[in-house]
Length: 392
Image 1 (cartoon, rainbow, N blue to C red):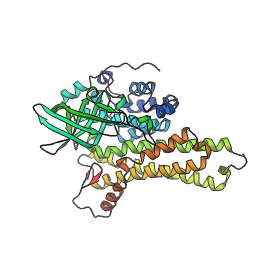
Image 2 (cartoon, rainbow, N blue to C red; image 1 turned 135 degrees about the vertical axis):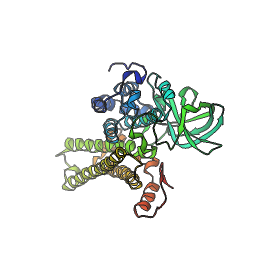
Image 3 (tube, helix red, strand yellow; image 1 turned 120 degrees about the vertical axis):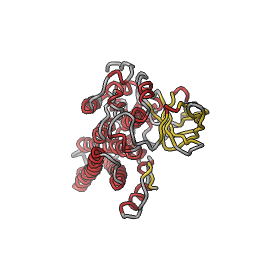
Image 4 (cartoon, helix red, strand yellow; image 1 turned 30 degrees about the vertical axis):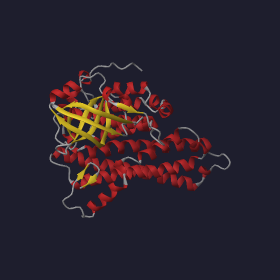
C-alpha cells in the first residue's frame, strides 16, 4: 500500500463515487486482515486508516467542490456495506467520520470551508446528540462540556461537537482542532471495540462563529440536494449500510463453517431444519435491504423535485433502519447458535456477533423510534415533525 500523501483534500479534485466503491472492494483483504487487531487495540490500524483516506472513503459526503465524492444515499450505503463486510469497526468509523466531515463542508460559509479543507488529510469526528454549553462572545462562542461515543476520534484532525447557545437555546455543531480536546480512555465495551469511541471533554474553548452551524441545517452553502435531508435522515444511510454489510458477512461466515463441517458426525448443520432456517435468514436480510433501498430511492426522487422530504418518507426511513438493524440482530443469533464452538471462541463470527449487538444500542435504532413511527403511520401525529430521532 502506497503511503497516503497528506495533502489538502480539495487539491486532489472531486472523487468519482463508483471509483471509490470499487477501491473499497479492493481493500477487503487489508481491512479484514486487521479486524482482530482493531478489536484488540481499540482503534483502526494505521495502514487501514491511510488506505481509507487514499481512496477517498472519508470524503463520501464531502461536496465535490471541496474534493469529495458527494455520494448519493444508495451509493454511500454500498460503500459502508462493503467496508463493514470486511470489518464492522472500520465501516463504522468511516461512516461517522465521513458524515461529520461532509456536513462541515456543506454548511460552513465558503471561505471558512476552503480554509478548513486546506487541512492535510482532514478528518472530522465527534458527537452530535448530547449538547454541551456554548456561551456567545465577540466573534464566536466559548464551549464547555463532556461528550461520549466519539467514533473516529483517534484518527481525526478536528472534532464535531454539539453545544447549546445559552442565550438563544439554539443547538449548533462546532468544529474544533483535536489538539484542544481532552481524551478519556474509557472504551470498554461488548462490541465495536475497534471504533475507539471514547469520551472527551472541552473546557472554555473558543470557536469562531464561522466554524459552527445550526444542528437543524438543511440548506447547504456548498453542494447539492443531498444535504437537504437533515442529520437525522443521514443516520439511516450510515447505520443501514453498515448493518447490511455485517449481516451479509455473518451469513457468508456461517456458510463457510457449514461447508467445512459437512458430513462430520453430529453436525447439526446437516439437517433440513438448518437449511430452512438459513434460507429464511437470507430472505430476511434481502428483504431488509430491499425496504431500505426502496425508501431511499423515493427520498432521492423527492430531493431532485425540490422542497422538503414528506413526513411519511421520513418515518419510513426510520422504520427501514430499525427493521434492518434488528433483522440482522436476529440473523446474528441464528449464526451464533448454528456455528457452535466456532462462534464461542475468539474469531470472526464472535466479533461480528458482538459488533451487531453494539450497533443495536445506537439511538437511531431505539424502541422509541418505532413507537413514534407507529403513531405517524396510524395518523396520530398531526402537526408533528421529526427532529433528529424524535417526533415532536
